[in-house]
Length: 235
Image (cartoon, rainbow, N blue to C red):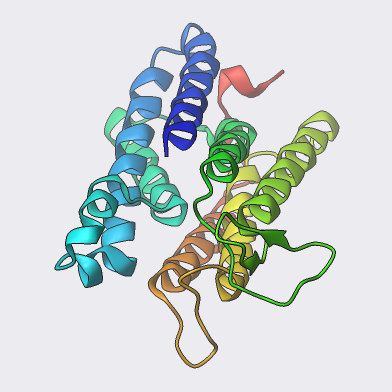
């Protein structure tokens, strides 16, 4: 798990560097970023426990997983709610979602590289195809971490293009929440521990919540066209 932990730390440092530069121009962005991290950490752990951690707590072999286990879906939900709460506390009038949409997919992609190196977050066992991978035990698996890496890098590229063309300003993170929620819901059918259409797993229910939160934010923002972007988002 060491490669995953190291690259997760790298992703966090990338985020801290990104936001520190912008906080120099807007002091209120620092507590907003800090709250997003705290919310993401809490949400990632709570989401994991609700999805599968509590089911395995009696197993001695699952002790490390209970300590280290977390989920991106829960982290996104917790981080988003943390930002919304802090912005209300600070009475911060600006839209910050485009900043997060520029950073979050890149951070998740870095984390997924760690998953690939560590051999965790694997896909289901499936028939051998040109796109499948063989794990350390010799089992043929769906390339789950690799697919999510490609998805998030695609999001980084997409939002970069949207920013350059000034399209969908103020809605980028809502779009990412919807896209990732739908992607993760469907991708869970190909991941371990897996799911089926008759037995959805906890991560899929969280994915639905994430997508609905994104849709709600998208609609509310569309009804408030006069919402201003943060001063640091004018680049």
